[in-house]
Length: 254
Length: 117
Image 1 (cartoon, chains in turn blue, green):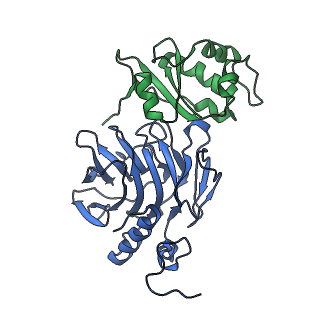
Image 2 (cartoon, one colour; image 1 turned 90 degrees about the vertical axis):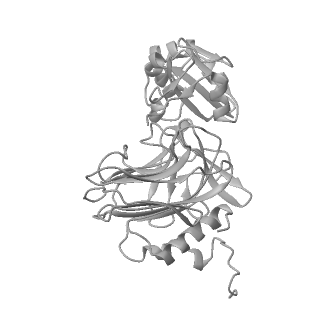
Image 3 (spheres, one colour; image 1 turned 120 degrees about the vertical axis):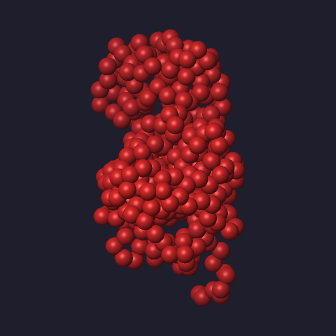
């Protein structure tokens, strides 16, 4: 059955909001969407030991039972609930390929917390060369979200200001090491671009951490509805598309 | 049912042996991680919080059984003897708190997270 324009309100089957189309080449990355991923459980309130993303089939896992986020439903919207105490997942041996660019789009909702919290980061320490991190709380003092990246030079961080607690938000981070670009967007609007010198080099291969830093600190307290990570700078049109997809997964209107 | 447990730094190894006995695999021996939480007196703790079965409290108080993946039962027994329920964290006890909100439980335990900037 054909539906007319505007009649695909972000439904799971909507071809116009399928982020798989962004991976038409040899891109590395994934799109995580709890409505379409393969999860170890889909019983609300139970711990998720593994998720295999519906785009690119990448697997996040957590072997320790108390550290697993729980699968939850907000009406029809599924999400992962991270407790802010010890929950986190990781993807071992992740490779961004021989690239120095990245775009991350996350649909999240923070809970109450004054702690530093990471949403997703490459390697155990984003202060290392070839690492990046998207944080819902990057600076504790200013309680601001942020995205940072680094090549062989210094860490370059862009900050998005405070994101409301208890309200879904779309956070987007983009970085290009050689172009000295680290940028953050909130709900489809660019908030800050940091053009500081990041040095040279590509992203390191290593573990990718979801909801915590290195599985040991900066535990995220809140919900992750959807997440897209790709090893290139999306075009403006693609970025608008990706953010619209993420927004559709958490009920945000951009 | 969610349980949140503050484990004093000195009891982390013993507590992880107890977690191996009460858990579902050898990986539950990593339940207590870095002691990044502190009480008002500055004592450091590892905190774990997770969903457990309804029978967890009874199992945690029962005689320990060696799991198929192995555990140090003496260490686990030391940790078991140190468990308290519903009391604030202190450096001599594994303080457990039952409640659905993990951060509310942490507040009840009287510990705060110390993040490195």
